Image 1 (cartoon, rainbow, N blue to C red):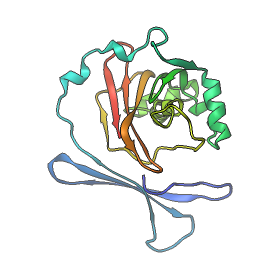
Image 2 (cartoon, rainbow, N blue to C red; image 1 turned 90 degrees about the vertical axis):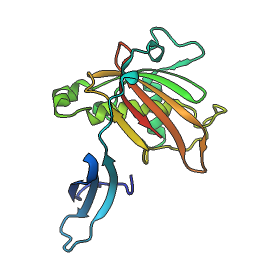
Image 3 (cartoon, helix red, strand yellow; image 1 turned 60 degrees about the vertical axis):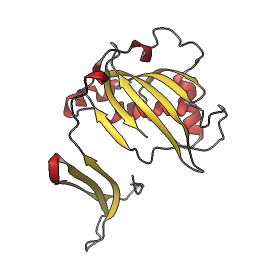
Length: 212
């Protein structure tokens, strides 16, 4: 993610998405925007990525029920979702009904489990995506329950996703998933925290993985 795409009241922008085939099945992906009414070739680059065919990974598809807490995981504290969203709102991150996908969430130092689902308002759109953006966003929201440092003390800053090293999609998910978020040890810089997120179905089979 290069630059935020901010839409303010009374303004609009033209969005352009470019998907370019390269070698060995790789495709580059770019998202640009331009203010409405602006002429010329001045476009702002907001996001860039590459799509790479993934080799079959049978190991990642094996059930791992350790990622699914049937009861409150040992050593974890359960956090009411409404408290989490209230805390996010206090930091300037407002999530409306269509984006509140966390059903339950547990946390401990550097780690969080969350059960997430696609809100009813958006379920009619599920078949239009390999994974619905709101469901993926809900899985990322689990990071908000994870203390931002290894000591478990929140520092009051607002953290938002700004990029990732890779996204691996194993299959089309259902409308509800488990999200297991783990902060990377020693991967913190002054203003950056790195984490890995694993999305699983109710049987423990990996559906998607977001690294870094």
